[in-house]
Length: 150
Image (cartoon, rainbow, N blue to C red; front, side, top):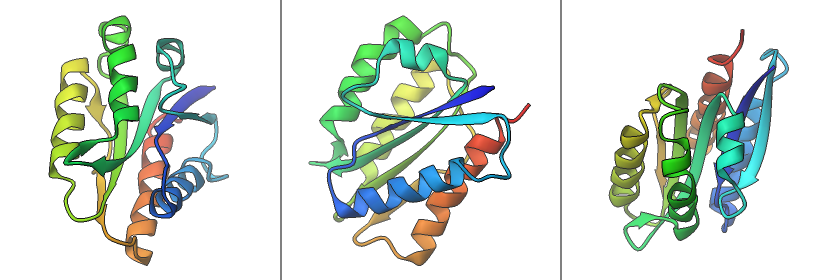
């Protein structure tokens, strides 16, 4: 069975709504043979990353960058996972009050360095997520998970 690791920092109701939609899409009953594992960014380890076949990342944009929690995650796993996880698929979502550019740039830079392959378009939302945003989050989760089906 393939494992999809969902690493998230979910400090607000807006981030929570996006996270729940991603998890719902990744856990859709039509997606068989994929186990979605949810781990908060501050608790995720290199072992979690090495044991997974693909990744979904979620963060708020704080002070123009990804959350400190997601940055901490990357700091902890980067070198231990650098060679072993090259080419693995990932996706991500970012929520911000008014700008997510720095957070997106940071995630793209780090995942490029890791050699991960973006498997779906990122979902970026500023302000309160609308119905279309929530649907895009569901599709993000479903797309990345479906890509792991055997």
